[in-house]
Image (cartoon, rainbow, N blue to C red; front, side):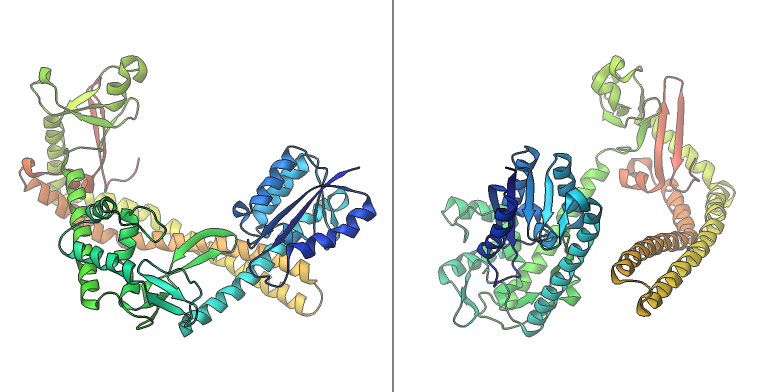
Length: 499
């Protein structure tokens, strides 16, 4: 007898259906076809688009790869999965291992209908999108009314099912107040976390405190009585990643529940957090930019490696830059001899080049930007025009297809498939157009960039070289290629036409 694997799933949006009902559904089919049940794989309360969360599904796939059963039986395609890409990949893996797949309700059998599985995958994914949109609309309605659709309480609160709202957990609230007070007195999140953990304080889940959790608490408006909804949303039903929504679009319900903190303390913490964050970033940028004058700018012309900063006693501790590949691997590994240049020589070369560029009213810079504009503008304008014609063509095709569908000349399935193809092509064309428009805007900005480049050259020439910084160099120099084995150094500026 052929061994049969049964897969049954009930998702979160099906409250009245049970796994048991699906299993009963298979009995008569199995008896009639004289199959032997190898195992029953069940996943409950998971969406069909989330294959990684369906543990039984993962076990089903592994057993199929190990050829422990001959036939996979499911009620319908949508029960098996709704993420088109992942589902088709899973089916392909089972096909490759000789597994026969039967979806009873859809009348699909891989022995005769393998070519139709792609169509059903598309239809199942469209159904998943419809379900997802219904859920989103429900949540949006809840958000507008201030209704709570998640009862997970932040630290300091508990959810009260009788009043259907959050109430203060006083023992936890004391910890929240302590966290805010410590931060206002000057303690950082690392020190606060260490203090809480050392003194036996634990999170709601009984774990030690982390810097990440403390940052979330310090920025959570919930503690001043505000319920904020609609901060994030799914990009697509088949994509797990969430996108952040603009704060202007958040739905805020003030005085939704009792506050633990005063608004004055909460916003004082927000202001202090922003100041500290800016200070950290400014210091970080300063350290990185001013570490060494030509850091990450000088490249080895022989092997392409970045030069590293060095000071050696044998060279009287003069700052110089050497090929990082050679310093790490030696002559044998880098396939060339030591390639290095002193910082003093680099400064001299840069200053000489800037002096040359400043001659004749900076005509060199003006010519560079003129070349960029002449090269880019005609091509961009022509390409945008061509794309407009293709977009119009696809739009007309879409309208013709819709008219044919409305008159009954084209069936629903054919219409959906062709329309989806047209929509994908239109999306690609629109993205290409947006990119070209962005490029054309950059061309318009060349005039401003030209002025900035001239001003920067003037500023550097008027400044003592001892006050030059790495940040200044990176604003004007694209890269410096060095081959001191033949005595060659090439400087590429940001404004030069690419070679």
